[in-house]
Amino acid sequence: MKNTVTLVLILLLSYNGNCAKILGVFTAPGPSHYLLGSTLMKALAEKGHDVTVISAFGEKEPPKTKGTYRDIVATEVLENRKEMMKQREMNMFDQADANPFISTFFFGYMMPKMMEPALRNAEVQKLLHSDEKFDVVIVEQFMNNAEKALATHFGAPLVVVSALGANFWLNTLVGNSAPPSYIPMVVTDYSAPMTFCERLLNSLLFVVTDVYFNLVVYPAENEIIKKNIPNGPDLFDVLYNASIVLVNSHPSLNQPVPYVPNMIEVGGFHVTPPKKLPQDLQEFLDNAKDGVIYFSMGSNLKSADFPPEKRDAILRTFSKLKEQVLWKWEEDVLPGQPKNVKLSKWLPQQSILAHPNVKLFITHGGLLSTTETVYHGVPILTIPIFGDQKLNAKGAVNNGFGLMLSYNEITEESFTERIQEILNNPKYRNNAKKRSETFHDRQVSPMETAIYWIEYVIRHKGAPHLRVAALDLPWYKYYLLDVIGFLVSVSSVIAFISYYSIRAVCRKICNKRKTKKLKQK
Ligand SMILES: *[C@@H]1O[C@H](CO)[C@@H](O)[C@H](O)[C@H]1NC(C)=O
View 1 (cartoon, rainbow, N blue to C red):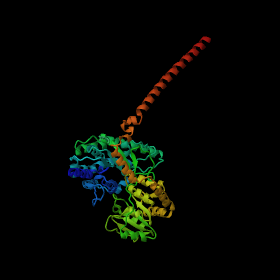
View 2 (cartoon, helix red, strand yellow):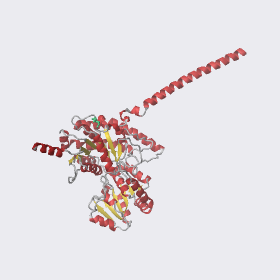
View 3 (tube, rainbow, N blue to C red):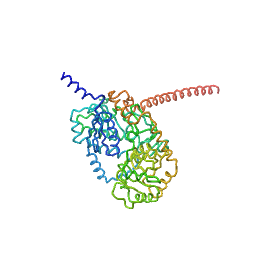
View 4 (spheres, rainbow, N blue to C red):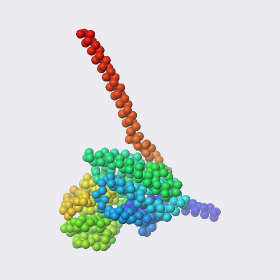
């Protein structure tokens, strides 16, 4: 009897319903990428799953969730990033000038190197050499394909999460078609409909990216697997083996594009209901009778790195406004700080955007910032610098809820003119509200969608039935080059034969006529 009770107790304790063991790998050295990943992993833990998260940041306090939450923090990634930036004397603002080809080469070269230290981290290595297994491995897609081998290593299906909308790197993973005729590459500032020149450059960029990644980047990432993962698989066996990809997009934000069945749109899943603001901020926002302009260049770019002449132009512009300005400024003092400007090194962005007095958000146009502004219906002025920011900025302009100011064009006049236009023309605010309504109009919340699909992959052992056949075709078959080649050859042969037959027939007829004529004479 006693034994039976013990057995039942053990069974009850170890029975965890549909609880799964989930590994999340979010090693991009950008706080916004981590925010996205950690929000998802916390929600999964809250649902009762046991999660392990490898990242460069980690949680300050262990989250209190129904399932367990284990952090493995590879701070090496941040140190490595700092070192790489220092070696190249890089200021991220310099990226504003880079053309799309240079950006593509740059990111393809830098990102795998930047994140490799995560795999070398001692705790990660310990996990790799343990006999732990997972039910699913979730990896953020950010040019770190080597990490996808972790799914194979732990014998689990692979889920990919993208901080960006559908783009070249995601589409190639799952065989999604994205014709360069109307879908701009992510590092450009094009938008549909594209001009002839834009389509030409967009198509060239498409081909160059494909060739560059296949010949240079993927082999380099394969080396990273071989170096760091015991019995690591070949990159090309894992690259195209994602069960699903969760895409951070939604037609209210991004250009509507086709998706294969295992691409799931979950744009906005990181947005949480507004929290209580710190008292000084609450008072500042409540008391701003003429409204508030919120200014932040995101978590990667530092406003403090603006060169002096740009900073002065910004300061002179702000000092003339009747509105209050809330500025994410990363240093202790701002020389020449106007009276209507409040500074803070860190600001609870989502809760600020939720405040009704916020009239305008001046932003770098990162996708998370753009998503949050659409969520709350606040118009934006973007100063895009790199990555997908120009594309997002262009999207906001096309959708009528924002204006764009290119970094090189920042002067007191241009900055003032754009701010006044957005503040005084109701069109921007109205469009932002409309976008917000379409953003919220969904059957289920994006976070519920994300969790549903992750659990779906676990339930269906990788859900291979969602995979499109395009993935199993070599490129020349995918682009039908063999069929086109065949048709061209057959047509050529037919044309060739027809030409010579007709010529032969004509000659015969002519010859007959000639002989007739000769005979008549
Ligand atoms: C590819 O995914 C399937 C389904 O999750 C899995 O069974 C298979 O082992 C994976 N292959 C590799 C090389 O990881």
